[in-house]
Length: 174
Image 1 (cartoon, rainbow, N blue to C red):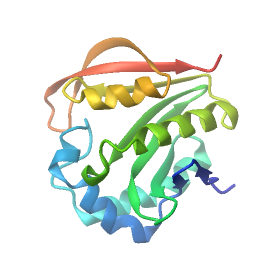
Image 2 (tube, rainbow, N blue to C red; image 1 turned 180 degrees about the vertical axis):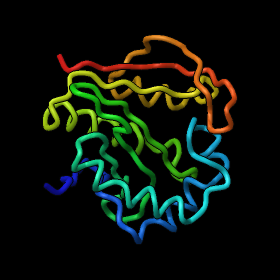
Image 3 (tube, rainbow, N blue to C red; image 1 turned 60 degrees about the horizontal axis):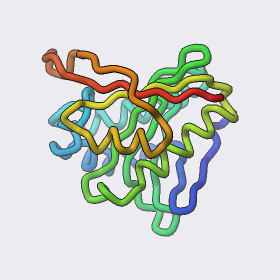
Image 4 (cartoon, rainbow, N blue to C red; image 1 turned 120 degrees about the horizontal axis):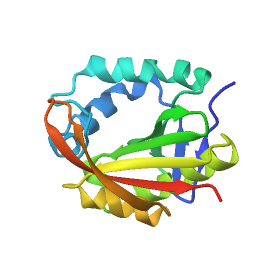
């Protein structure tokens, strides 16, 4: 089964395409984007984007992960990514990033609300968790605007093996 596209007022959430790799490398490879995440490496190589995009269909088929390109409906411009980076039974873990030129425009909140709705209504998930670096409070505001609530602070190892403080959020399908 093909991963369905999702639409909001301003956005299309669609599967990534191999042709998106260059834009992904440029947006995710921006140090200011990378430093706001636990996992995006810096520097970000073109082959990393190609490999990441190439892994999506298999994860969708296995029902272990779903990844969407966040695209502006009117221009078809790729803005970032939103994913359930882990699906385990009735629970999923949400992750996202948006290119720096598109920060503060509400795109991430809009995409997050739509993916949560899809996850509950179509994937049958009962709980979604997400976490952000405590040094990135804007990501917490996205989560709160999407209806998630903070549940705890924890430590995780980042891409460099260093301890990072994380705020954990959740939303339940009630």
